[in-house]
Image (cartoon, rainbow, N blue to C red; front, side, top):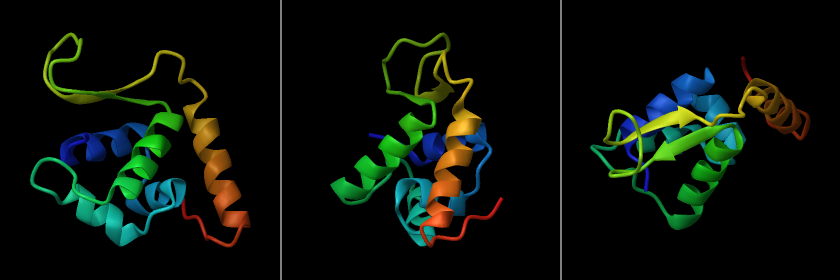
Length: 106
């Protein structure tokens, strides 16, 4: 599971906007907006949640669940240790989506 706060924090860590996250995950921008506006846990169909989490993890985001090992405790997000290529990955994914007919904005 992922909370709306985790989703917003992950996007900020990656330095992308809602539209870019929508392109990376294959979801619509309004879907991302609804997910981020959730009260706590992000709601959506299983396919959409899997697409979202897969895109975030592929970009180098590690989702920290309640009770998972972390220095401060609680929920959160962090970049994976070897995620130095996250920016390159994101740029490539956005470029690929743009060349396949989806227009990317940066």
